Image (cartoon, rainbow, N blue to C red; front, side):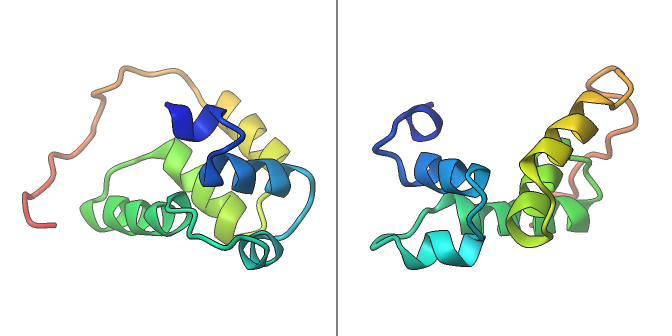
Length: 97
């Protein structure tokens, strides 16, 4: 939980700078170390797609980081989703990832 709430966190810093309107390239160029959440988001989105598992938060994070989706649009899209049960029509992973 610390990585998303601490100003010392690289992931927190990336999110704050994106929220201030900087591009991902600008943010990453200004950082001396890797913000592991960025490549992890790409991997999580690829795996979810491969396994056909819906992961709305990961999808929106991927949109913000790599597809020019604004954070405000992402929040609006997430909050406008119809409520449903957590296990509705979710496929079981094949075990081969």
